[in-house]
Length: 223
Image (cartoon, rainbow, N blue to C red):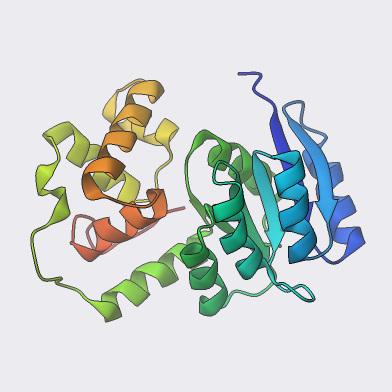
């Protein structure tokens, strides 16, 4: 798997960008194609460079990372965004996810966790830090434990439902493949069909649906 992942770094602190660049470019399949110091510049550079993944700071001058993420979703829909912050606060996590981010990590994430997140998001997985995932699930419990209407998962096949539950538990495609004894490409196909049948915007929304409709038992340990 020699697929090169092209990355745009967005942070208002140059030293942080330098640190991320050193970590990422030590990997043979990761390359930093550009940098930006605020959200406006991030959008311009993403449109110009068309990176695969953007590592996006939240707190920046002028346009913050959440607004920039929302604009990127419209301007370069194939580019995936991982939001990074030093603050483990609900409004950042939910703001980033609502804006269309594919991942949310704290800046104190370990090197391997950061690298793994970039690769996972590039493959089409969603990435949430365990702390953020727990908060998402806790928040859902307070919003609507038993939604009205027809369970959207009713249209899934038995195998698709197995994959859906595993997605709700936070497993990546590779982990689902290992658990269900399937090929990873087969899992990816199932995930695509599940998102279409659920009319889910992305994998994160599918995870939320799994918990909201009770397909994942009380432990949402996604990480």
